[in-house]
Image (cartoon, rainbow, N blue to C red; front, side):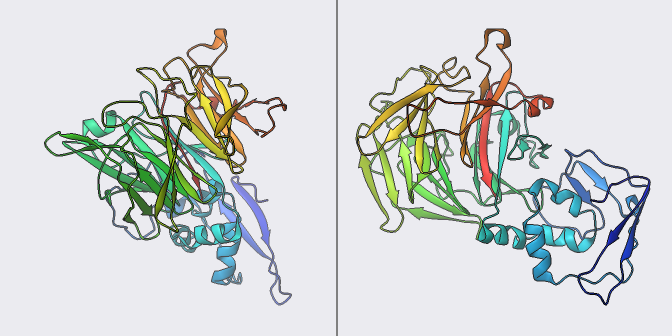
Length: 421
């Protein structure tokens, strides 16, 4: 490994005996803030709605003297970069223009998906924040994202919803008298506006499957302020940056939740156009473009006037829920159409009816973030992960992550989503 300092020398060896080892010299390199996304001033100007960057490094920050080093084939470069942890990519962008340009395309991420070397990242926003914080899969490293290029007070400070598709973080919220959509592209570390949904709405269900995300239901708000609960379903493709209208659900519903399970898009719970709580769910089969109604899937769920949408997550093709009224983890038995009780969850999910709590799947683990359950830690944020077992006899083991405590976040989580890229 090359250790950076005022004057350190590393050896670069080629695989062929025709080339002699050459030296790489780095002079006066100042190690930047590891939690800041770099901006490379020597790259060409790129167009986009937002060009906000946190830190700029100029060519003279590092003097690289590479003499007669054989150039890697393009395909080999892509294969190598695809296997590097994503949170190290910003460092590679500093090496040369070629790496910087390559990492700003989708080629590396396509290979990551094809080779099965994708990894999850957690995007989070808590009370008091106007921008998102991105954590790596182990919650060891973090990066503060720049904000979208909008000064609209309603969008920046109002309620928003976030979802992911491929390498896109999608955020929707009210902007002026309408609903706006902004997307953050991981490759370029920039925000762009649109494309908006065919039917813009809020309080909808969503679920990600690879490079696409499904949205269903929600509250449609017209320009004159008229609100309508809808059953409309759409799919966003991050590769084509387009929305496609799909077959509508059986029920109109808002405050509902979604997940992708065993090849189907599921929508659970919510409230209908009359404000009545729905205990049914629906599953969508994209191959047949049809919906199947699932009666009483949430028949045992407790409802309150301040109830959040159902907190659900999928791990290893099993569906889990966090029963907020009892701070309890449950597992869904599809054959019996019933939920098995697995044990307690170590956060105060019932304090606000489930609001302010993040409950997500993180690879083969469950992730829960919220207010600490211990009396001595009330008002502080806790982050736990767990590898759940489908056997109720196996005791739950929640592991607390204390490494992200260096990030000052309020314990009330407003938005949280997981990107697999």
